[in-house]
Length: 449
Image (cartoon, rainbow, N blue to C red; front, side, top):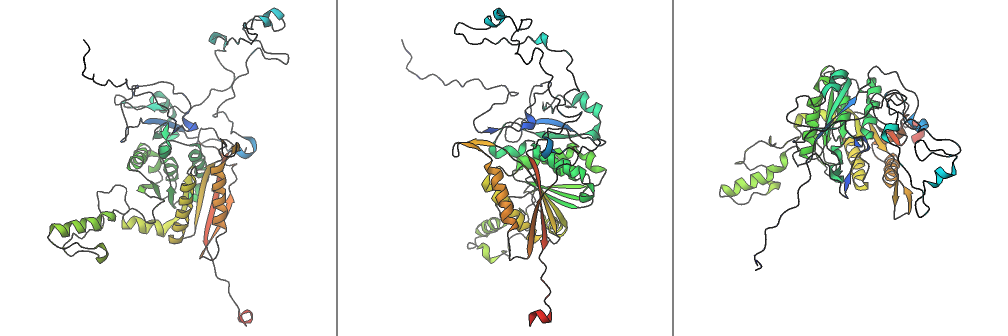
């Protein structure tokens, strides 16, 4: 007899928490492509349920300057960079041996590698045939490790050997949707950090604003020299990650006395988040509760409504003191790897222009971008549309006339030394935007007549 009642739905088994699931819309930074040395049971998730990793990046404080430019020679190669894999044995100008011990000149040996259809049947080299000790220096990698509650020191012996001042520890996620790419570490941020570390005089004692700070890596290293760094982005979970990374590296910023303030700054909004957006609604609701007629927000403060204009419960909001300090003292604006979407790129340049008109001092924006090549079906060829749009925005900004500010754009010579361990590629670029007030020409009496 067949039971007519529907059986309860049984969900498919969920993947293990230490397995990263790649979906069609996920993005993974090249920085995180290396396989970690060891894995731990992952028991920690972010506030939105994403796996959280911790990576360490070596700081080469005493490294001799490297003068070879990424634009000229491609990757920066030194004893700390990725070594070229050793050449495989058996290669010659006459051919490649397809099987260990086979005679390359023997016709029988070659015939033995053909399948029944006449195609080559490639035999992989056994692992034992690989050299136990590869020639050249060891290969340095970035090792993301899954955070665990059981471990007090997730970085293990490697961090202790390096010393606390020789690494910067960054909490991040991996393989995120496009809207969460700020939670990953990108080469452009490391490239910008290299420039910051090589220009100590430029950042010493300054007030710095970073737009789209992501994990906060560049802001943290800027704070080793700057007086105040405003580390800004959007999203409570991302900003909380920034706050955590600042705490993890407080020993780096303590020596210089720099202060990092994590704040929300949305490029799609004209004003900073001060926590006052709740005030009109709160005032109107209180008026109704008091039996009064609806109090229009445009009438201002209801005399019977509480007086504070800011809500202390709004996280990462700006105080009046912060806003005054930002506009009164900022001279450097940073942005790294935020030019991947045309709409966001437009919003960033609009924000740059708006901030420049509010800053009291002349300022310099330093922008880091990676020129990514992609094959598009629309063009049926390899293009770099996001980079091209970024360059067009630079040209439009430089061409602005008739205002009280002048924007001058120039590329940065990328021959500055590499002070962080990562793969510096020739597609990484830095651009400076100088913002200065337009001085009115002095008109003499003769000229006026």
